[in-house]
Image (cartoon, rainbow, N blue to C red; front, side):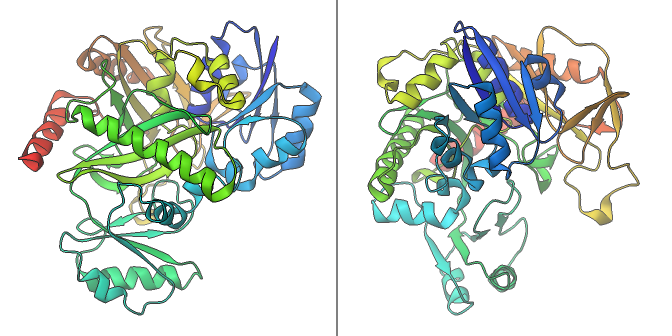
Length: 443
């Protein structure tokens, strides 16, 4: 029997829990969550509810359960040092230490790491502690700028010229607002291209890529509205995306491999976990937007259902540093994930309606042809309730993206309540627009 501790309560963790339970290693799952995710609970032998900064409670649960290892789902526990605390208690983890998690928790750390070790993919950037000279740098960025506060922002803190502000002067005002919090600000050149997510298993020496995925951050159809944590995503059977060329994936993997080496040189620690790069294919090649120190959400729901290798054995190889010795295979299928969210999700307060903070929803027909992953929901005695965040990830899996998209869309109709979703994710016209965009950029 293999006892595994899973930390996290979202749809990403639901997908991880499912991958664990598919293992042939006789798994027994122990889950530590902030809220009662019914999908994870149904797969768990035991669970605890608590905060992710309560490291003592997490370690006590691990000791009581007698786990072999832990898997960390979200970024908050990583920033809080849960891997360090578990290690001190004698339990290894699939997830980086607090120092290594700076790859995600500090955008400035990552930019400087690429710069120091001459790793390709860095856009032009500068870090500022004071407003002095910001405007001069902004005026040198002919294609516009991107303003980033340091630290975790839930995928919603990045501000892009043309979307959030129009002029260098307006960018300066945003920078000054960030600086008033006492934190430095990162200013980068705005890039033109198409984004893709590349999630990699990493044992500190070996990097193995999962299928590439494209996420949709914008709240509304046509990529309009504010940024969110991600409204959905899709992947193709060939592990690439139709607007990418083979060298794009190769370059993304190579950048990740070099980052792994640089982290060891910088910290003396081996990165053991998921290294997820958000990249952009541009005219000048692949550029790094950011790294995350865990699986993506929703991207985990695209790749984990496809993994043919035993997921627990993959986790053991990450911990032991033997990733190069095991084959890791994925089904050659397409996936489309669409998030069901509260109607007011992602909207400014002045655009929201009088919707209860916790609204009840019903999943009437649980279609076996699609995957249903619960996210920010709470199972109560009288039913299932949403919070203010993303509620349920619906994933269609098929031979083509077109069929997978229709499967996901049809399944969403069975969810009743004050919900919304993006119907255009995975549709032909959206994907064709991306292909045309990259053709124009590459000439």
